[in-house]
Image 1 (cartoon, rainbow, N blue to C red):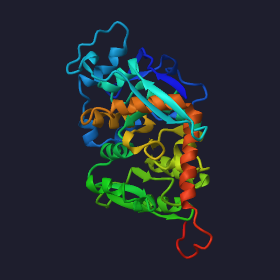
Image 2: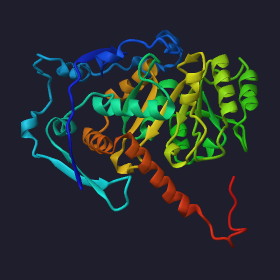
Image 3: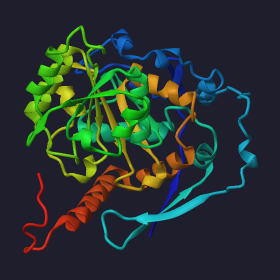
Image 4: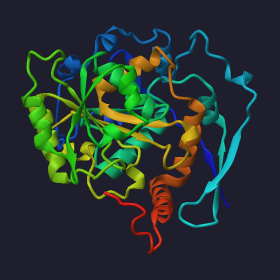
Length: 380
């Protein structure tokens, strides 16, 4: 049984994004010469709702990242002294993804324990954000440097999607939802409660039909009660046929032509063994990036009780989501973030991806029907 001690390092660089300070690594401040063209921050102003624009981050809470600056003595109100916390350590054992029956022991102490028990920054624990950035680069080919996007951690992707809808769609206005995702009963109530006018985008056995999307946008009359939709919401994996690469390229071109952003809500990505690149990934091959906001979660592959999800997208749009969080629940639970970080650092990327494969294998076995099951069910 391997023992791993989980500790956090300290970042010394601070940047301010849309009013909310965000910790970064100094090495990440320069654009890569091979970076794609990034949309200017001003471009996104038209996508923000009145609610999003009117919200301002907490003056005190937004200063928390400054505590990481060497020599700063924090005097922020309401932050308990860590010496008063009753917890001395957290320990747990986890499966070794590479070997059945083997376990990995993880201890959370010291700096990471204090971080997990204390108020944190709205975007999330810095080291966990960095880990997710590395995952997005490995899985989706997106670098956190020079491509105009960043990550914020939330209480699962559902919460982040809900806040995105509040930030980008005015109450009563229209939102484009592909007809397969529209059938996903767990998410549609979010649109109904806001409320939004859901405009169904046609799908077929190859996912979203680009011509159908284009037709909706072309036929949208200025005389319509609502402005032309500016957001397309889709669950690309797990609720219907996957949209192939050629169509995804076409949909991204339509998004550019008609000035819409794509909310790519992908909770089942790691269970589906998909061979089709995500919209977030495909966008990297285009001449310009910044029209895709991607939502991921640990709920399906690790445990929903951790309530950890993350959003990857343009700085301004993610900042708008952060502002809603900072005036509501402040942050995702730092205890959950600390546990997730300790586990993921113990497993490393290979271990996480192997575990995801193991989970996908488990559900695949559950789906296998006996040979005499004809007539019991059909799939598409």
